[in-house]
Image 1 (cartoon, rainbow, N blue to C red):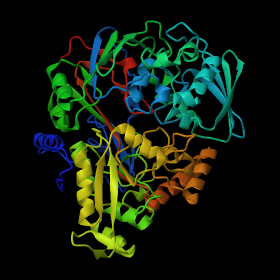
Image 2: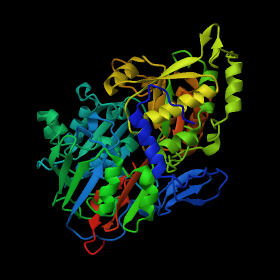
Image 3: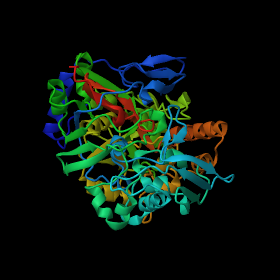
Image 4: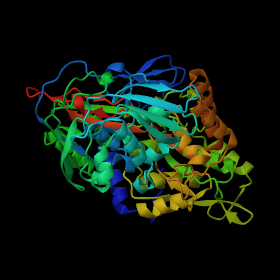
Length: 585
């Protein structure tokens, strides 16, 4: 399937071939039919414990995955590895995936989702919503402090929300999530009132996410730049030391006693310390875990998943993240040839998603052809096959769009112009060059010339915000609400001088906008289900991007690590209940 072009680095090719040889014989995830009434999903779509359940095409996990079932033993140091450094601990200022679990180590949120995805208390004990859906009154806990001794109160909430949307913060995520937030008012020390410009039903959901954790208001006001390397939160651990690109050490906060009630954990964390090392090399993360040099990896290598499962001293979990699946391509609908919906759909049908998923996930990733993760609320599996791999239909659509002639190299032409586009990518482990080459090969089979341009991340970012591209490679947008569709595809989310927008397809569709607008204003589950179904259907018709597989987070740890549960918003590990069995292996 892969055609080797001279522009592809030899090192990338050799690494890909090595990984494939190491994993020969590994099990490939089978597609799950939406007609299945109920089944356990043990690979790709869920973790090895079998807690993932597919019911009528929708994915869920056992409620017990999300709360502590018994007390653990205090003490010990957890040695953990992860592939990348976030480069800052200011969770309001980044959209890095590590924040999903890292934010829970240092910070607390106003609210928390329960096991079913409903909003439950955390730092806010309760809240009232006005009949028009524009005013939220939060009643706050009065026993919470930040690690600098400052009390958590209504002023802290006000300062944090202002920091999230302050242009100086340059927030690519938190600011977008609270965009309808208009102003805040301190009613009294432990009562805060938030007023929105319009009804926004996902407001509480987004406040439950790690990127919107509470930072010390004193630090925000007096020295906001220090948050990057010396963060001050109210969470169960405190940052002891940090060396960029090397690692970070966290120590337990002994007086912590305000975990989310859903978690069912009382008092401080069990671990004394977490020593986190940044290890980009997948094989080193695996070998250090296998040898006992580390206890836990937050980026379990997919190529070693089979070996990890087979090792009695190791445990493995693969979890689907809510929100939007991984996209192999985002198509700029304002630039030819992708201003033609038939061309967009034809190209999407020509891409072998199972092949793309295999190259990156080695059988661990579930191929995906629709636009919402299967465990997201209001996911509709009716459209899962709308963009299924279909070369014959792809060729028919290209012909219908007028690209019937071929040049001497086999590429389609019309009016003397070759059917061609450039795919802009960066050096990214989540979207390696080998994936781009595989997509290029699939496109060539149907007469589409897809050139690959590898640029530095900063260049790609500038071009993305300026709309200066035809197609972008790679990307996912995890969120705990189906409103992620608004973030990626509503016309209000297109980047501008005033907004770091995420609608990189630059899609403007009145029907889709209307459905997503109405969903934001509604709190009726029946209406929301219908509106989000309409949005999912419409996206398979418009094809602003090419979804490829579910966004999956994989972890592995040694068998003496106990008490691993998962965050309800992110499906990533929650370390407050983790403990070490000194008698275990």
